[in-house]
Every structure is written in C-alpha cells, then in structure tokens.
Length: 106
Image (tube, rainbow, N blue to C red; front, side, top):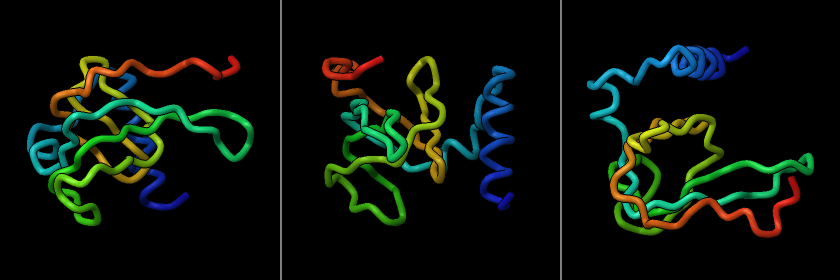
C-alpha cells in the first residue's frame, strides 16, 4: 500500500469517527465554488460521484475555470469539505443542483 493510500485510509477512518480535517489543513486546501455533484459510470459497471464547479487555489487547475474533481471518497454531511482520492477540497457556495438519479440503475 502506497503512502497516499495509507493517508486516504487513515483519513476515511477518522471521518468515520466523526473527526474533521484540522482547521490549518482545511485552510490550505483548494476551494470549489458553485459546485454540484455529478454521478459517473465507473470502469467496472458501477457508479461514482465527482463534483464540478469553479476551483481556486488548486495547483493543477486554473482558478475560476469550470472543472471536475476526481472521485469523491468522502463528503462532509454539512457540505463544508470533500475528500477525493488525491485532494481535500473546501466547498464554497453550492450551485443548488441535487445529485441526479435519473437513468441510474440502483
């Protein structure tokens, strides 16, 4: 297991215990504004969620240019932050779109 995978596993375990990311870590995280969820088809026939919106402060994404995150592995129940496999995101104002379920076979 890689260092990144261990860190992700440890993060998920702490979220399951109700812990939040430390304020100093969250303050340094990139921010996603006017975000909305999107359900994608996975390679194995399943589904996964991403977020799209306008990023700010991400090292590889242009500020203010609409983009999509990677697969969301944890979404704060109060929608203040989201964890993808590689990035902790601060969540700003949502777009207001609900998670689409039309056409998704459950």
